[in-house]
Length: 152
Image (cartoon, rainbow, N blue to C red; front, side, top):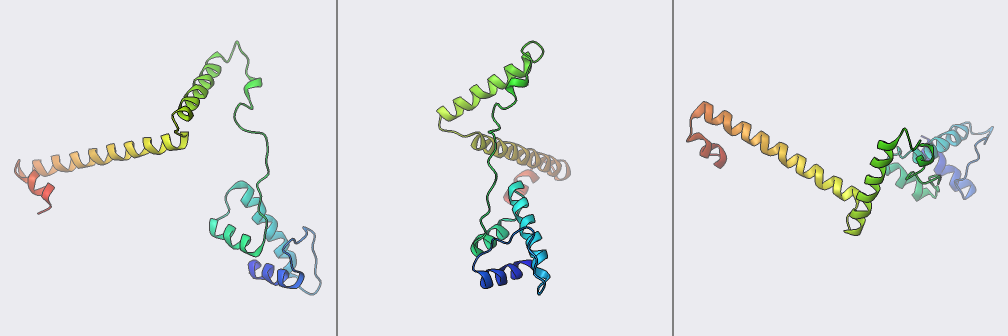
């Protein structure tokens, strides 16, 4: 297992910075471990590395970092044609204003989405409950609704 090979490497050399082109004629598993650690870095940058694996690697001393790049917000605005893309420019301006309003109220966009999803889930649950009660009423009559609600 590559994790245990990495632990052995750290015990031997005192660090976990295995070079990409590392070779050890005595231990061919180290070559695979070097490739494996590169894959772990790549998965971490893509944000697809399991949290438990991140924890284990960091515990060994592996420094996992995401590459910083240009901020996503507004990076394509220069590419829009003011004549052809009026609707898109207006939509982006409205979104910026909406997010600014959220921040002014002390709310984040993620929080707003969570609240929306909670309302949608509640609405679906209410619809399922109504369908169930209507089915009970059709099958057992008007008095059966109270029995179905009480669970008796």
